[in-house]
Length: 329
Ligand code: ADP
Ligand code: MG
Image (tube, rainbow, N blue to C red; front, side):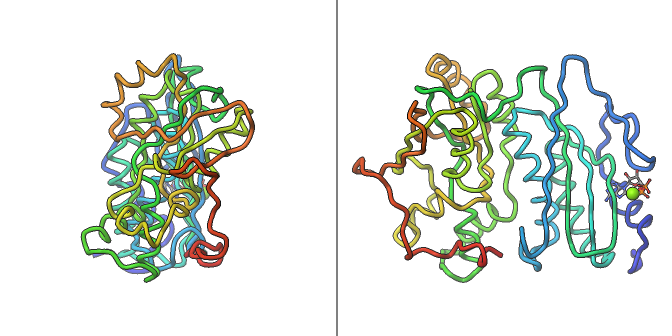
């Protein structure tokens, strides 16, 4: 049994220095003043960080394993969007108390996902304070091959991985605003709490996609970032947006808004030039997830969303307010 009220060093030793994974490129990991990492010749280091604050990014009572998983998943998703292969991460943790049950669950979720992607915890900082998790992740890409938001050109096709809107649906279930059959409820909870970053897809898209982004804030906002960075516009067709059977079943209540404008799906949105379509088709079975064609890049700036009749889609004015900022958690 672990005693309660561990001190900072006991927390690090007991929980964070016990990851069941040791990469050969970690020259020095947890325990010294800094980590020393070997970057192979011909690779560039890709670095990203994300902060998760209890009550802001997840409800205070979220299961600790889900918090550990999600804190790393959102960072892995950023590397996936760059086409990078994850390698190492650091963990800055502010904790109200050193509760062994909480730390056990958190590390279980964190290290299970870290093991899946062979990414090693190499350092961090631990302090007492409101529950906040800051992870910095490092990955590698062959030099010059990182995917960015800036390369989309008119005529490129726009694709998304997986399905959109399930995390939104999960949140509506948690909030008691929608009812689903038990099996579907479990599926959308999984999407909300244990999102799977599309790392294999990102890696496979190197040299094929002209631009890529991960969908953390909804496809309309995130595709908007690609359009701005690339200096282009786009047209997407609502009936092409991929949604799950659970979402389709609740469509009469949901409409398109959650699939378009709510975040937390962590799918990839990317563009493929016509010249690379045949190569893309050949590898599409190796991405680890299905991809859907949703629209096209155009020269005229702005995002045009059209419905099944080819008419401009207008978001519901007042009818749908579940996602107001003050109701997120
Ligand atoms: P310093 O005072 O030099 O910053 P610390 O006492 O904070 O060192 O940390 C000691 C070692 O434990 C360092 O190698 C640090 O990277 C590691 N460490 C501290 N907190 C964490 C954490 N939450 N996760 C992983 N490693 C950590
Ligand atoms: Mg420190």
